[in-house]
Amino acid sequence: MRSACCRKWAGNGLGHAPLGTINVHASLLPQYRGAAPINWAIINGDTKSGVTTFKLQHEIDTGNILFSSEVPIRPDETAGELHDALMQAGAETLLRTVAALKEGNLHGQPQQDIDAGELKHAPKIFKEDCRINWEQPLEKVYNLVRGLSPYPTAFTMLQGKTLKIFKAVMEPAAHTHAPGSVHSDKKTYLRFAAPGGYLSLLEIQLEGKKKMGWKSFYGDSVSNSGYHRK
Image (cartoon, rainbow, N blue to C red; front, side, top):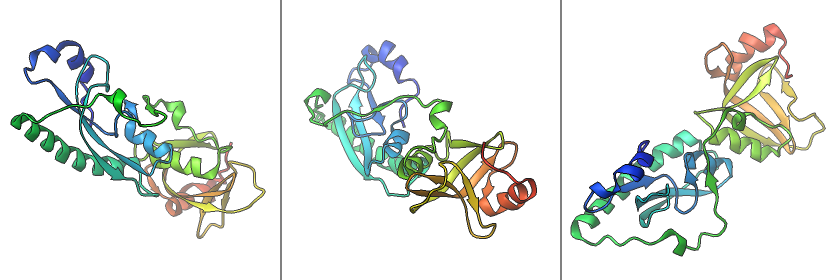
């Protein structure tokens, strides 16, 4: 939802728009300034997000806030689903902003005047950010999967191959299994152990294969090759 060219505009185009230049950002600024606000809101386990229109200035995502709209985050919502919800909210908020601009009733609020508590940031996500650390608590692992689905996708290693996890559910439970160990009854579940329970896989993709449900994956790979995590 952020303009891919906003840095260029901020550097070269601000003086060419008589009424100023407006951007839409997929967070409730000043929270989550940066390239990946949708992903990081879910990765951090937030229960709400939103969109903000603001006036561009030279420092990225720091201009005066014009309008904002809050959007709740469901406990099982993925980054892709939140993106679609924010896209709709962003369109509506931008229309409100343009209408106020046309009427001459646009009054920005400096971001530094907003008491937003401790600021969270949304830096660009790299490949290593997507690797699952099974030593982390179950909920953190689950939030990482949600926050990176469908792209760039959380992953782990299975028999030396990359296993992307697009969809999963948490199964809180006390157990003594090693973090990251794989468990299945070959009928009803395929899951990884983590502190506090299991991550039960629903939609996955093994390196070199297409995306599929875990049952198809199990028949295609696990039962035939005896896959185990390394």
